[in-house]
Image 1 (cartoon, helix red, strand yellow):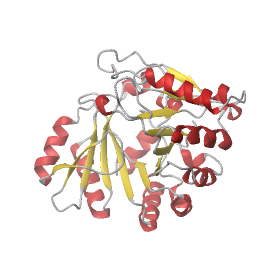
Image 2 (image 1 turned 180 degrees about the vertical axis):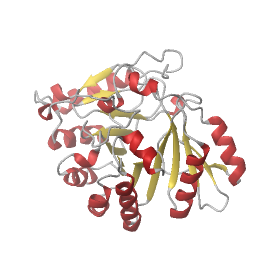
Image 3 (image 1 turned 45 degrees about the vertical axis):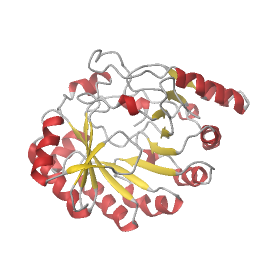
Image 4 (image 1 turned 90 degrees about the vertical axis):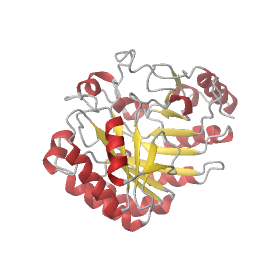
Length: 323
């Protein structure tokens, strides 16, 4: 089993299939960023499939496709179909900024994606343009409607709560999600690189309590395997999750690792230790060597991040780590 030295079962992989994105969100990618991996450094689909198959034999159950923007990776639907056929993989999901979702929603659903997480930080068009660097709100909303019509098991809206996020923006997003039966998740920014640190931090604990009282919410559970702690309405029509890695970290229940597009496995967002699988895969190593490298890496996974104590510890960007 994929257990780390603290007894946590690692059954969830966030798989970055590209470090490219068609947006330039202010909290994710610095202006003028050019630190992309060369495409020949990306894992190809055969390498990804082999790696996930080895992971699944050791207990991996969930895979989330991320980026950059994963829908920019050519023929992604083919990779989804290949991973959906692997024994042991029980759940495939995808995180997207939504700009390409109207085009791909139907094919993703048929290929085996069960759940979607869509980034949407505001319903104000000018605010979205300021955050994302492009006027994309109409495209994202169109993509969400297309996904809703396809009948995915769950559609979650990821809203990053930055310094300056207004109560009115959060309340508008709550109303939007209630109307469309989407699950809302509010996310605190993590200080990864200067870009994230400069976006400012909003403590979500007061926001959580305000929404609990206003809507009469109670503690609940929503499927997904991620770190969010949920409140739900008593009638079940609305669920809202809070991902609070700074004000209320969830490290004791961490069940995930991240694989970057170049084959680097990141064990924790709050440290720089990693495992390089690309070189292993490209030297025709046996599966046993991959297993050994993975288990040795998990043994180095830390008990918790130190974002609050050492906010400048991690200098890499989220864009290069994988969402």
